[in-house]
Length: 308
Ligand SMILES: [Zn+2]
Image (cartoon, rainbow, N blue to C red; front, side, top):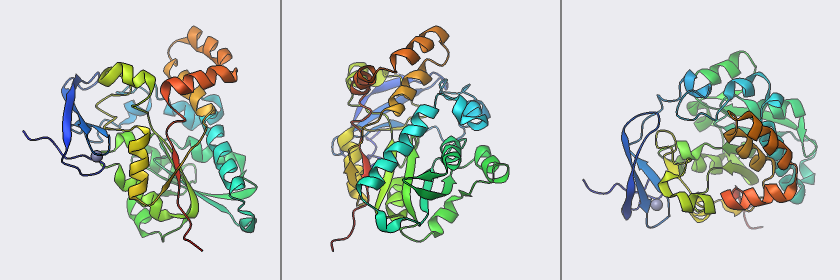
């Protein structure tokens, strides 16, 4: 069988890294490296059927997700650390760009891949970002999206509704741990680039396969879960993906997002989790973990303003 073309850049110059059996679907998956953009991608793609209700309860291929708690009360979930961090980063970006002429205008924020809606609900509860009232929208598919739309009164847009929106419809687009799940990761980034207004912010997180921990583990890294994480990035590969959609990489310093990543993996280990919660109050501990996992090494992005 010939090597598959890269799922991010389309290059035919790819190499097989190795095989791995899924922990959930007991079959062998193959990991391929792209020589041109650095993407590590998985064949075959398992499809979206694994994202059923059991998945969202943490009983599927990812034992660390806890969407039930996030949906019920985001403040009670470990994810609160990440959610407040994202609002802080957006605030800092908007204030640094001195968007003062937009005071009084609502801040239009799309959460692409909104899952159980925790980010949308946390933003709705907070009410404003950088002093601007929020106008929120989300996108996802499946039963949670229906629930958020009908029971929680959130504006959840279908793929067709997103496609029909005019260019520049949002000031912020968030894409939190989304692109690693998608076999064509360039598509949502291109959509975000179109839907952002010039100067707008793409808040994107995904695992870093060039981090010290990931390099040491290779495809044995727990993040290389081939049933669900099929497009795996490193900082330069992500920057290239942005560039192809006309976005500029934006360095970001994550804090609460780092705390959340540690706490979620200790979800089923109560004592260790309690100790970690204390240790993570110390900024040097957060910084050390950030370096090990390369969280802040992964850039977000800005849509450049046209030259004056
Ligand atoms: Zn590539």
